[in-house]
Amino acid sequence: MLTDTTASAQEEAEIRAITDAMIRLLAGAPLRSDGKPTIKSLAAEAGLRRNKLTHKHTGLRDLFYALVRAQAGRPAIADRLHHDNEALRAALTRAKEVRDQLKAQVQQLARVVQVLEVENEQLRRGDIDRRTVRAFPGPRS
Image (tube, rainbow, N blue to C red; front, top):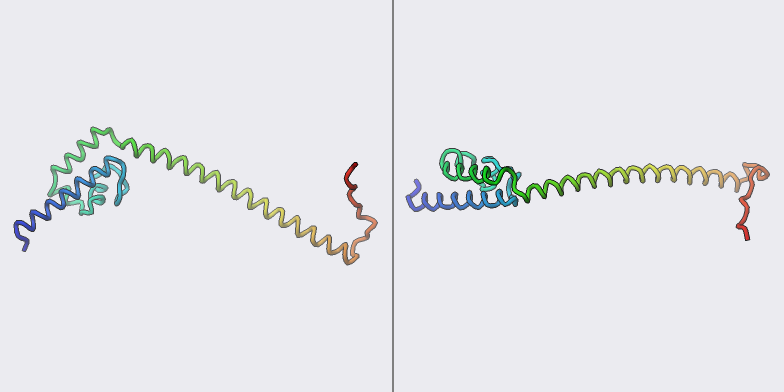
């Protein structure tokens, strides 16, 4: 059984964890949650079960909702992070497209080199009539 001082210390620790979590969420710098302005995220950020906010610390829950409404949704830093994330996703998509094009070109060049090696070997062995092979003209002076 918990003594009054132990229960009080535990309640103070919960309140501190919830208020710290509120600050991180409203500032757009979550450590343990997805950063959404919800009670579920607040509980995860505080490291507590959700029922601590829905049943025990209802005043803090109401304060959190009021602060979220006053902030008009998502914090500015979250908007910037979302914008940056979208830009990075687009850049990654472009980089993947370039990578795929380069892979295709490498495969094509590898096939060309292979054909040229086979033809070169045939020329060395004499399997191809040298009269049908024409030399490229040399550099012009």
